[in-house]
Image (cartoon, rainbow, N blue to C red):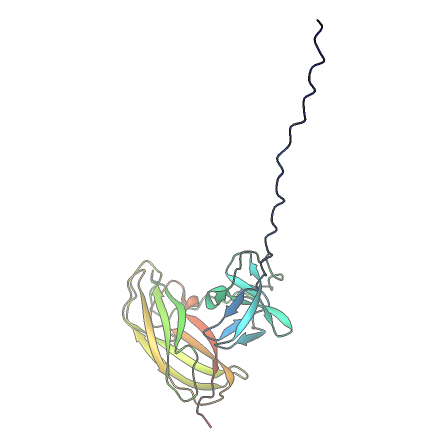
Length: 247
């Protein structure tokens, strides 16, 4: 007899796929910069944006809005505006990986180059090069009438030893008007090429508390040590002087 019609294939049931469970959205937290010492706030990411537009005192914090393209400055919220702080002086809490990278405002027109200082008569040129490095305050938040220590890293980045030991001159001024409040001197030994020493200088300031002060440290202020570049011998730092127990 004839064959019957072939059986109709039943459609294969497709396995059902469970809809993916939505992950709860993670609340975005704004990264915060904390400061253990006074920090200048500048108009752009660089020391050439001078003078500063303000400062944060030790213990204050700021919301981080962006990172410079070089990664070494943070754009922060400053009052009702914005400014830039040096990243190495900020302790960051929160994730900065999603922050935008910004180049900041146009660089200011460079100031006219200053003439290279003339070495004192009879002083030979030298391969030594003294450089003012990191400044550290201990404690980080100075208090009126209480002695604190200002430490400066003095380095010889040249190719020859320094010809003699030398001094560091420290001047403390009131930031508002530049009036000098105190000064002191520290010393350092002969430095070999590549050698760095920390020069610690105790300081006690009892005037103009609850204000910003500016410390300027100058290596070999009298130019007694021959070196290849005397133009990198000074560094400045601003800090907030707490009232403490001063009247």
